[in-house]
Amino acid sequence: MVLYSEDNPRETNRRGRIEVICGSMFSGKTEELIRRLKRAKFAKQRVEIFKPAVDTRYSEQEVVSHDSNAIASTPVDSSASILLFTSEIDVVGIDEAQFFDMGLVDVCNELANNGIRVIVAGLDMDFKGTPFGPMPGLCAIAEEVSKVHAICVKCGNLANFSHRTVKNDKQFLLGETEQYEPLCRSCYSEAIKEDKK
Image 1 (cartoon, rainbow, N blue to C red):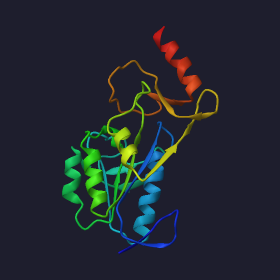
Image 2: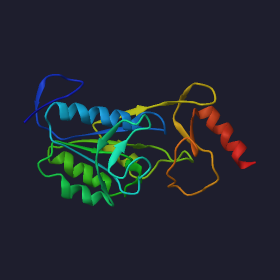
Image 3: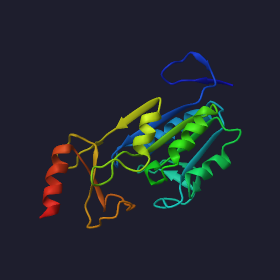
């Protein structure tokens, strides 16, 4: 099979690779994931999309962006389950990677080593501003990392922090604009000070 890279239109033999799309909430991660997967489908590549079964915010079966763009997906409970569905696949998409177990790094490596293009989207930091789940490991092993940004709702600068606006210390809290807001570093620091008062 012949694949075409978006950055290099030359023909290449089928080679596995890992692409990571990361950033804060409302930065367009899922939108970019869907765009890349739809392009692969248009190119008649065999595509399979996965999401964590716990993410039921918009749909139990689809990956859905905040802009209501959607693509069919397979919800799974663990990263190891992904390997059960990927024979005869050219491209694997994984959304909300931060909610998967740490085994996702090995799963993505195995897929890429088997010649599959793996596209992963997820939050790189949690609401406390610390690296989130398997995302740091995925960024380390990826051939390509795209950091996308939201717009700070306080000042309009580029935002890369997800500030939680409700009182809850659990790392995993599914939410939308009622629970989170994107902030730049400066506004995030100010918001954290206010939260501690």
